[in-house]
Amino acid sequence: MRPARWLRHVAAAHPTATDVVMAVAIAVVSVLQGFDVVPGPLRPFDGVAVVLTLLATLPVALRRRAPTTVLLACMGFWCLLPVAGYPPAHGTYGILVGLYTVASTRPWRHVLACAALCCAGWVAGGVLGGQTPVVTLLAQGAVVPAVVWWFGDVARRLAVANRRLAAAGTELARRAVAEERVRLARELHDVVAHHLSVIAVQAGLSRYVLRSDPGTADAALGTVLDTGREALRELRRVLELLRVEGPAGDFAPAPGLAGLSELADRMRAAGVAVDVVVTGTPRPLAPGLELCAYRVVQESLTNVLKHARAASVAVTVDHADGELRVTVVDDGAGGARVTARAGNGLRGMRERAMLYGGSLRAGPRASGDGFEVQLVLPVPP
Image: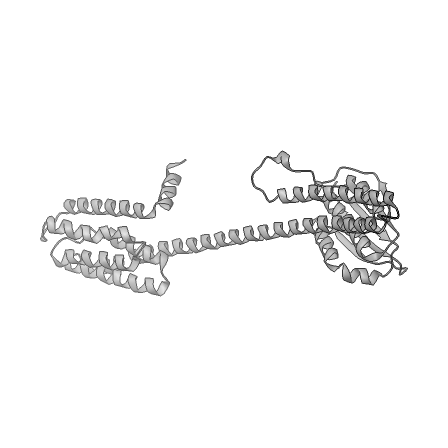
C-alpha cells in the first residue's frame, strides 16, 4: 500500500487519534517557530508565550466534536500573545485548521461569521504586534481566511457527494435484493403452482377410482409420488440460492427446454393430452433463456389444468433466426375466464419475458375456442 493511501486509511479508521497527533505536531512546530522569531522591541519568547502557544494550538485535537468552539478558543488564546507583548507571527496554525473544519462542516452563513472574526482578530493582532503596513494586514486577513474557506467548502461538498454516493449504493443494493426476492418468489410460485395442481388432480382421481379401478388409482398415486419428489427437488434448488455457504456443486441444474417432455408426461398423467413440437434448428441457449421458456410453458400448462378444462394442448418450440418462439395452445372453453383467473400467473410470465428483452402475448384464440400463449425471446447470434 502506498504511503499516502496508508495515511488516508489510518486517518479514516482512527479520526480522534489523528487529530491528537496533528494538534501535537502543530503545537511543537509553533513553539519552535516562536523561539526562532527575533523579538525586536517586543518581549522575547518565554515560558508564558509557550503556554499561550500551546493553548492556541492543542484544542485542534477536539475539532471534530466542536469545530466552532475550537476555532474561538484558538483565536482567543492567540490574541493574548500580541496583547501580552509577544510577536504574533506564530501560533496561527490552530486558527487555520479550526476555520477549515468549520468551513467543511457548517453552513456558509456560520462560516462567514467565523471568517469575519478571524479577519478582525488577524488584523488586530498584527496592529498590536507592531506589524506594518496596515494594508498588508488587511490583505492577509481577507485572503488567507477566504482561501481556507474555499478549501473547507470543497471538502464539505466532497463529503456530501460521498454520502449521496453511499446512499445510492445502499439503495441499489436494496433494490437488487428486492428484485432477487421477487425472482425467487416467482420461481417458487411456478414450482408450487404446477406441481401441486398435478398432485391435486391425481390425488382426486385416485380417490375416485380407488375401489372401482385399483390399477388406475395405483398409477395416479405413482404420479403423485413422482411429482412430489420433483417438486421437492426444484424447491431445494430454488431455496439453495438463498444460502451463502456451501460449494457450488450442491446446486441442482435449472430446468430447460430438455425438460419439456417430462413436463408433458406429467400433464398426460393428469388427463390432458400434450403434444410438444420442435421446429427449426436447435442451438445452445443461455440458461436464463431456457429457464424462462420452461417456466412460461409450465405456468401455461398449470393454467390449463386449473382453469381451462381442456382435453389437449399443443406446445410449439420454434428456433427461428435470432429469436426463440414458444407457443402453447389449448382447446378449452372460456378463454376470458382463464384470463381473469390466471392474472397473476400471466403477469409473472410477462415479467419473465421482459427480463430477457422478449415479449409475451396471451389471450383467447381468434376462433373463440381455447387459449393461446406466445413467448418471443431474442437470441443473440
